[in-house]
Image: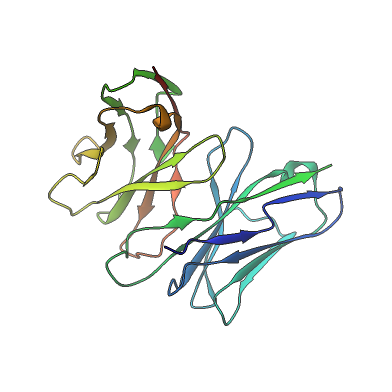
Length: 115
Length: 116
């Protein structure tokens, strides 16, 4: 079965640089979520989109922005990177109807390291 | 206030035995969902099981079952017949509200080690 795809899987950036993380949800999933998991921490919700519109916003820094495109893939743009942004970034997807309505599937994550 | 609490930072279990991972939650919303995820050392988050607040029966998925005690606001994960591959971090999570597309709030996690 198709899963959530994230790219890149690993990313190394310098402080003050920018980064773009991409997420391709499971086909027919209409909702995308972004989470940030710091070392030894639990995942923290950043932002979500439903049918290409922002549906909820969590503790996402102003330096970060995200959008969902017409093909439902999503991108998380991160600017002025700081050392504290080093984390595992997950994208998850779900569908608002159907038998799997209650399942939120995670991608493999993008491990971002800021030097 | 912590919405999801996992009080066991680490747990050990002997292979082939059953183990219970604790999770308590706090919400005033009558409609919510509870999830368990497994995170191996490789980092991916694997969905294990879901329990809705209105579900009458405890959820089961293969060797996983969820001991849902609504009055006590607990949603413990029971893994039967533990296997070495079960060694991982386990997260309990909650989605509040009737909106099926809601964000997840995670607990701190429990690291499970299965001994041969």
